[in-house]
Each structure stands twice: as structure tokens, then as C-alpha cells.
Amino acid sequence: FILLAYLPLSAVGIYQLGYQIGTGLQVINLAMNSAWMPFFYKHLEDHTQTRTIQKTTTLLLVAQTLVCFILSLFAPELVSLIAPKGYANAHLVIPWVAFGFLAISLYLNWANILYQQKRTGAIAFASLLSIALNVILNLVFVPKYGMLATAIATTASYSVLAFITFLLSRRIIAFNYDYQRWTLTIGLAMLLYFASLLVPPYSMLSNFAIKSGIVLLWVTLLLALNVFGQR
Image 1 (tube, rainbow, N blue to C red):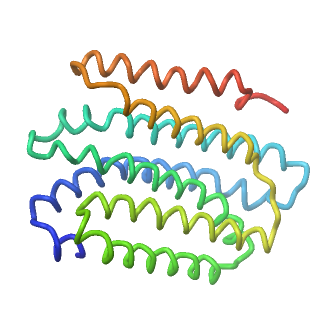
Image 2 (image 1 turned 90 degrees about the vertical axis):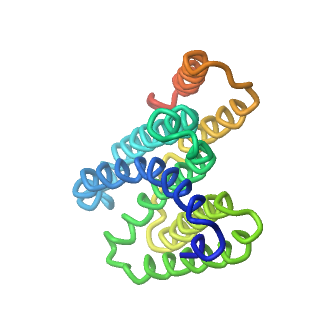
């Protein structure tokens, strides 16, 4: 609604396309979380299962980060394949939305603790703060920066939601996920993505080869840093 108030309908359509593509990660998030929740709820406070929970959540996060990374890297190619040239700028929106939903991946891990402890009020509190931040950022920056401001506001508000939920969950149960591996997984993906922006565009086939190589480099680095192994 804020976009409609400040931008032409064509810009809103471009944003909606980029957002819908980025939403692919959220579909995967919800599917994975639904499958994982029964085991997590049952064994959260069973210390014999702590390592299993840590390892499984790390592997899930690697898979979610992979989807985010692929969507972000291949955004221009995805848009060119499914939409007319007039929608080309939708690729600018996709990485911000994808990384925003990656923040939701993190949020779900901490929200699951609150749900398991029946602290739904804390989740509502965090959600309201996130929504308020999103609205404020849109009102302040959309008139000047357009649809990209909305995409960045989405990432910022989802990141704040994840951080507040983290703080609230720690006050209830200080469960230690494998934060070192989480940091390596997401940090390397972000570093390689922003480094990829320095590579000049070539033909679609050449871009596909280069970007596939970047994804393989990310996986290789995770293997070399023992993200998938035992500590």
C-alpha cells in the first residue's frame, strides 16, 4: 500500500515480481520447519539430544542459505527467463528479499523455543516491533529511494525480528545452537555474493558458469572449514 501511494503501478509490479521470486525461500523455510518441529519440541530439554539438534539445525540452515545464495546470484538470469525486459529491475529486489527470508530462517529456530515454552506473547511482541519498523522505514525512505527501499526495509525488519526473538528466547532457555557454523555459512555466502557484484556481466551462458563456480566455491569452503563434520 505504501508503494502504491508513492510509486507508479509499473514500479509496484516490478517489485512484486522480485518479491515473489524471493519468497521461494520462505516456502522452503516453512516446509522444513513443519517437518522439524515435532522432534524439536519433544527433545529440546533432553540433553542427550542436544548435539542432534545442533547438527540438524545447522544442516537445515545450510540448505536454506544455499537457496538464498542461488536466488541472489542468479536473480538477473531468473528475471530475464520468466519476465519481459520491462521487468529487468526486479532482479535488484530479489537478493534483499531472499536474505530477509534467510533472517526468518534464523528467527524460526528461536521462535520454536518460545512456542515450545508456550511464550506466544513474546513472539507477538517481537512481530509487532518488526512490523512497526517496516512501516516507518517505508514511510521515510520509499518517497526518495523507491522500491529498493522497500526491499531493504524488508531485510532490516526481518533481521530485527530475528534478533529480538533471539534475545527473548535466551531469557527462557539458553540453548546453544552451533552459532560458529551458522556464522561461517551465512557470512561466506554474503561475502561471495557481494564479491560477485564486482564481476562484469557477460553472456547468459558465461554468467551461469561463473556463478555456478561461485556456488561450488562456497560449498568447498564450508567443507574445508568442517561445517558439515563433527567437532
